[in-house]
Image (cartoon, rainbow, N blue to C red; front, side):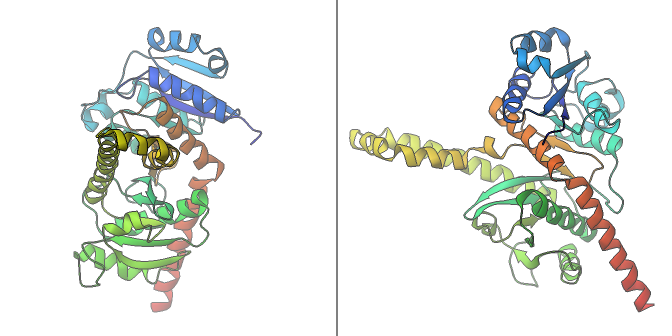
Length: 348
């Protein structure tokens, strides 16, 4: 890309803000020389950090605000009382066309509530969804929803499928993605009514790629499909379970290789391969959950990530712009709506 791209950052969001945000932006700046940043936060805290990173400072505009959304703030309270918060101002910048996307490591519920209120959902979308990448045996897949909507009906699941399908084609580069609904079993009789209704519609929806039907939990890591669709309650549990499992495996390996001299020697021999494994399991590489279904790019970074992880979240926002995910998703919903209208006209 030769054109400049501006990303708005909530400098006060996250466990170690603003240090992680500023350092992460500096990493991303080196990866993407075309980037400019709009940072929103307390000048007394952010300014000195920028002052130590001159090249980042040269491409960053710092907008001062004393207000910040707390990690434990209720979304409704943050929405009403956080109009001048660093999070809200960063989202406003996207709505006003001053930035191509917003990245925040702050309160997830507040970020979703504010983004939905300011950016609005796309035509045809009832609720936005949180999506993220999962490592699999075949590479990586996309999973949604991961916590924005705890209870979903069939329409929500269909919307999530359309959004995930468009994202897989645009960002993952899979022209004919496979997609399925997460269930308690792959048999058609399993699961609740909303899943059955969504599956019936998706079998005739004519989306690009192939609907494989119902998936089980182990299909996520197997990479059975490119897009895994579920409600936010189930998706969030699956996400946290996967993160915990990755941590458990790393800890087991660390203790195992420290258990004896022979084990230590084995570690020295296996170190190059183990580095690759750690990289593959490192959740920082998959940091950056996407809010799909909004009229603007919004990315949620894990609140406890480091600078490397935050830089990866910025990368996700860049990719969404480069690949035109907003426009492609809007086009997919328009096409699906038109097919439904035509089908009703023929039936009538």
